Image (cartoon, rainbow, N blue to C red; front, side, top):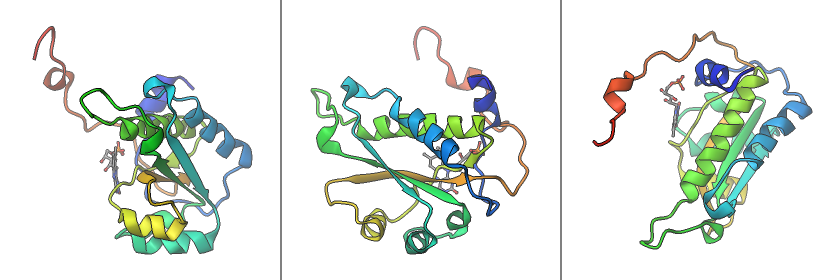
Length: 170
Ligand SMILES: Cc1cc2nc3c(=O)[nH]c(=O)nc-3n(C[C@H](O)[C@H](O)[C@H](O)COP(=O)(O)O)c2cc1C
């Protein structure tokens, strides 16, 4: 599958089949995250891979909705700000570094016929408590990973290019 095709086909999926995800597919997805670029190549990212239903149950309290725990796999994307590059004016880039890696993984999942959904609207402290994440680590996002149990078409509802592209100046 071409990258451009994966970009068009990827959708946020919130209903999953219980069918297990093959280990090789999970590894392929994780490898896509490992290969992602990061500022100054600091790679301040860590990913928690959850398949155990008891651990998934612990995540119910961290997010207002529980559809995501029905996916066979959940990946929690974290950053270690102490490892990350910081611009001279203090601007931090760990969130960008983790987001790029997670989106690489998500596009690779699409290539594998798997579905995902970015989730950030969780209680970060509850998430850290549920997963034993050290205090200095930040939780950036999570995504379910699995086979879709709903039908969605290609990406369509986006602003037209002319609304977002500025030629030569704003
Ligand atoms: C950074 C980010 C955070 C998101 N957080 C959530 C979330 O907490 N819960 C949720 O159900 N969807 C979440 N989404 C999914 C978006 O709602 C979805 O990507 C958007 O509506 C476009 O739909 P599509 O992904 O199917 O193209 C998030 C997406 C992004 C990129």
